[in-house]
Image 1 (cartoon, rainbow, N blue to C red):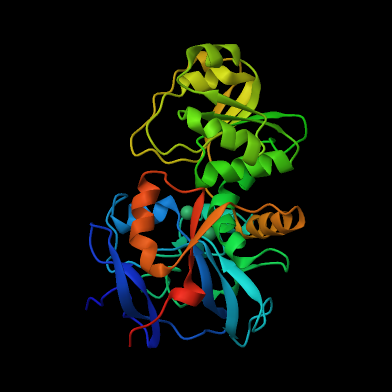
Image 2: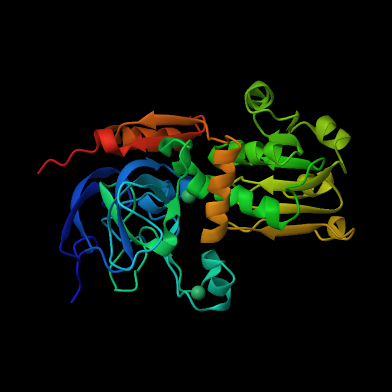
Length: 360
Ligand SMILES: [Zn+2]
Ligand SMILES: [Zn+2]
């Protein structure tokens, strides 16, 4: 028997959901599971708006389950813990990122790479181990296995922590894994949105020289004066791109639209690496000859739970925070429209705690 997504459980919850491919969000009464032995119940206080939320609300990446409550940049406070929970206590500040469960036994899970587990359960719109469909953080509370809950250190404001849980780890993890988190390297960042601006901040914190590569000349002043980038390349300016050939040790490419890779490959030194973290919906063309001096093109997707905790601790220690625009929940549809036009510096964060009010 089919059960409507969001109504499989007994515990009342409230949020905003998309109902169809229009992606328009509206108030939604739904249910969550009771707090299990290893579960942490969290009152959501802030939730970032990721570009993924927009795609999923409109079912642009394969069939979404409706009603769909988006949100995987969740920050809040523990309100209840199960009897076997060891890591958290009521009242603690915590976060939840893109995933809420995995098999916990495969090679990837054993290596703290739950993000690559084939049985990964995403924070929303994903089939959970009990068969119910997960619902995200545009809601009053979530119930999550403690393994997938991140502790947020004092000193890191919750509204700043929220976007780090997706946008932050998306760039932190590949910078480390691909050896780009070292002083004196020269790192390029392609695209200056929610993810790109975090790449600039983390790469600078790791001591790199950072060049932003963008199609928009009007982002230059902001990138250099505000975000602390060292230089800026307009990707459509042939002379600038030519002059910068062979200068970068690595590139974090955050662009989600189809774009040519060759100009970026040409910017790399020999043995340099392009790491793609944006998700264009069509394949990119990959020229091989320019790769033969051992250049690589790789992909990366968020990070494991252990590394996500390390990232949050690092951000707290070195005061790395996203630039955010805090909005009330009833602004969320306008925010989605603005996000589509890249009209945000650089992440919307919904003030769930103060603005989400159940009508019932
Ligand atoms: Zn995300
Ligand atoms: Zn696994």
